[in-house]
Amino acid sequence: MGSKSAMSPAADHVSGPQQQAILEEIKIPFSHAHIGNFFQEQPKLGNQFLEDTLLQNYLKRHLPPAILEEVSQDFERFGQRLVDEIDSLGRECELNPPQLQQYDAWGQRVDRIVTCPAWKRMKELSAEEGLVAEAYERRYSSWSRLIQLAKIYLYTPSSGCFTAPLAMTDGAAKVIESLGRSATLESAFKHLTSRNPNHFWTSGQWMTERRGGSDVAGGTETVARCQENGTYRLHGYKWFTSATDSDMSLTLGRVINSQGQTVQGTRGLSLFYLEVRGADGKLNGIEVQRLKDKLGTRPMATAELLLDGVKALLISPEGRGVASISSMLTITRIHNTISAAAVMRRVINLAREYAAKRFVFGKLIKDHPLHIQTMTRMEVEARGAFLLVMEVARLLGLEETNMATEQDLYLLRLLTPIAKLYTGKQSLAVISEGLECFGGQGYMEDTGLPAMLRDAQVLTIWEGTTNILSLDVLRSIMKSKGHILSAYLSATQDKLEAASNVPGLSKPAHVSMKALQQLKIFTQQAGERGGGFMELAARDFAYSLAKIYIGSLLLEHAAWAGASETDKYCAERWSEQDLCPVFKAEASGTYSTEAQSLAKQLVYEKKRPLLRGKL
Image (cartoon, rainbow, N blue to C red; front, side):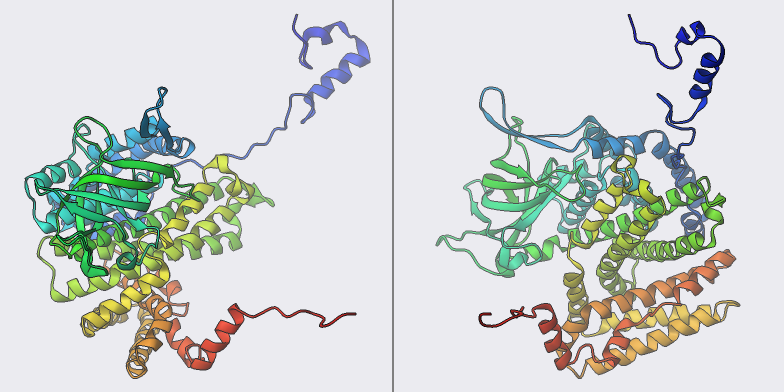
């Protein structure tokens, strides 16, 4: 016997006014099982290549016609695969983060990191799509790197964070290629760059120890003892290892000499290659202490590891570990930048689609001018970030094919940390604004939207915080004796002068030229103030370099013969902000000795008791 609902035929046995009342009640929204007639419509993910006009036009502007046709067809196909298959896998990865199984049913220590089937499938399709291989096959000469990174740009927001191990895999392949390949490293390189899912490897990056992240020289305690067969055994504790479920890793350690001593500082660090598991499938002297409980990037396993006699190969000259792994840091920082630009684009695309169907206050959201103004500001930031990312990718492609000029190499060195630090900050602001575009739904975890913001926070931290990278910018300029800055000023000047002659661009070009002149004045004055002054101004200086260069890239794109009126409008909108904040800060006395003293007092102001003595 089942219970009867309000829709039950029992109503048939009631006659007259009672029956009519029941039928009227059934029609009333929110009565009994009814919960109303209105439901918000979920924004639908479209083909992200076909929806990205800027990406299409950028490729059209730069790639040779034959390459453009082939790449466009592949990207359109891949864009549809994202919709049909990959995006749902990414969501599965988010909902099923890795788990650590330290012991089996019989008490044996196994330290097995258990990942979901969707994560394993991401690894397979990454190989199928050549997301690492494309850069190293060089089928398209210097354009190969740009094409690879553009494809990863499409993939990132749907990847369930699998682009993180891909970044380290790409970086490891770059290190091996730059160091030269022994028989062992040749095999590893082939695995890292394979298109065969059965052969494809991913790589981890195990550098951070308990004493700290960016201070690698002072923080690395891992030691390496040479064995009779020429291999090494590593002993240490890695506080933060990314993509711990990978097949191999690169790590730093200090070689113990014949007297049982190690060299401290950067000069004592060497680079080692290790495989996570031996031929028997067991961990290679590794104990997984715990998985990290992170704000975001939850689908990727991040762990604390005890290295207890890990078998490894020394792959750098002894004491040259930091220099040898620097190419990996370049690649991972560029991937970080790609992620920032990609997620900005995704949240804007979804918000744009949602605004075209959400009806409030008598009209669709897209018909409210204030909402469009907000989205326009987001769009301008996202476009600027995209062009900066592609510029770095283009320069990297030239460097990898020995086609780069001296100016190109200088720009690549400078723009890599600048792009990483600036786009990381952009992405947090744009994605946060993007969640607002969905109202309360943007705050609900089951929509998948909040994960975008949680994941974005890592972009300002991983591979160097904003301040650390700002100091790296200064270091690169000082190390080159100013040549890097000269290359930047020259390249920017050329772009701005070319744009100033294009109708409709003279005004924003003039604004950018003024900002560039302010930057020159500041650098001349800073040269007389000493290193301490520049360290204090480093962040504002890096922001100024980023803002002015992005402005020049937007103007360069708008000056292209195939550019639209919206391209010109975007360049104009970018120029409305303060493009050289370091000049303004210096003029207001922000970097003075008095200001420094007051700033410290402001942060560490001591609390005083309201009343002294006894009442």
